[in-house]
Length: 170
Image (cartoon, rainbow, N blue to C red; front, side, top):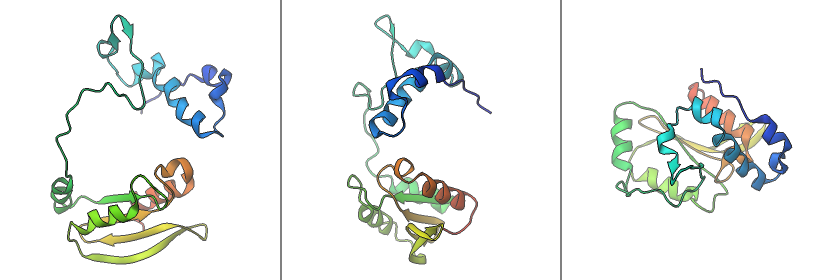
């Protein structure tokens, strides 16, 4: 079990400590991941943190990452894993303007798997939480919330994952 001492004093005294504002919630990880005790618990080696004589801070969307995109289509990887019997949960937000669920559905259709459980709503506490469809090769497609579902629909996100990981229907 990984135990991490959170920098509670810093969070409590900081003006960004209120989780009511989206901007505030996106700033809190900076305090957490840049805390020395957290970095130590995660075994982040200091050699990678030093740049020009200073400890480099973690950045959420780091523009300085030096990488080359080499995988443009993940379908062959997904086909390989699903053909080996691995289950997959594919999520898309109902109200996601970055990656619309229709695009995800088109991606799944390209896999040419047959539909096992037709498109239907799934519910939490009697309310529609999203929609789901199951395919052969143990693929479950689920919608609900938006681009960052746990941010806007945390209860629904937890219920979705718990049901899927426990092999219970949505």
